[in-house]
Length: 366
Image (cartoon, rainbow, N blue to C red; front, side, top):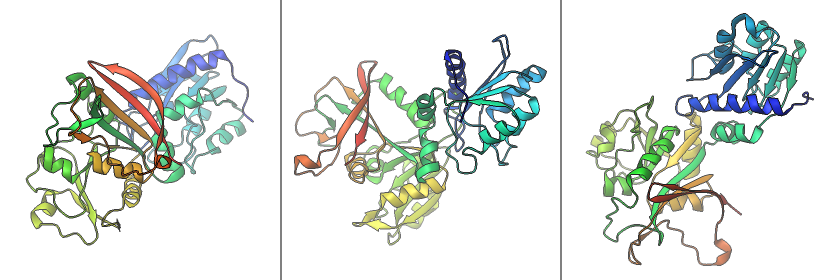
């Protein structure tokens, strides 16, 4: 049993979570973690966060800043300190060596190599361990990492833009631009935090997108995945000219032009279902690539297929204050015939973004 916590612990853990969020775009495939070290007089003597895989963890960065002042202090960590040797030494041993008096954690590590072992090592060394504190906030920050550790699947987030009458493009395919510049800039942050961006071959043919992160502080480009069951992607598509990897996800039987194979960073030949790429197999492949969060930026067909497969964890929908008319294309292709097939949603956020609205929802699959 962990020791009890108090209101002061929540205040310092909130600061640790703010530090952890600084690694939102850079830590993959590792979790986002922050650490604050506070002395007996409630003065911060060290702060740190995990910046990127292979580099020091949050606890080590905070301990380096604290130096000898860490002795007898309390360390607030957003994730249970690791207890195993990976690319870096175990953090629990660093805390023990620094002789901190107390460690407060936000949540236990879901990684089976760590879970509970780090906390136990601290206790055995005579360090008081308290928590969890602000567990739900810590969970939300690393939902993708947690899902990959527990279910061996990445978190799937879909991004869509629609008019007030839930249309995404004119019947001709014309769609630029439904939403305003602020909403399009906001999308860049969802891309930046993702390990992979998934789109469909129809979107590539229709819109010739680049699917890149265009932020000034961008430190990496997510993997770009084109779901193309029959090898229809144009070899000259702009998406192949961008920095980072562009991968074709296709079926084992598909015939791909040599030019297309040469342009792609890789070709994933996956099992098929109903003549198309099995999306469950694709998600498993992404987990093998250590992807924590993936963003599906696709048309009505592929996004609808993800929903029909029950693979969507979160939906981000931008709604513009305009009407495109009844002949325009729908938001999703969901061939439901009965009310019992409807997918219930829990709306978690509705916020204005410039002249548009951003709606975040979680599907409640039956």
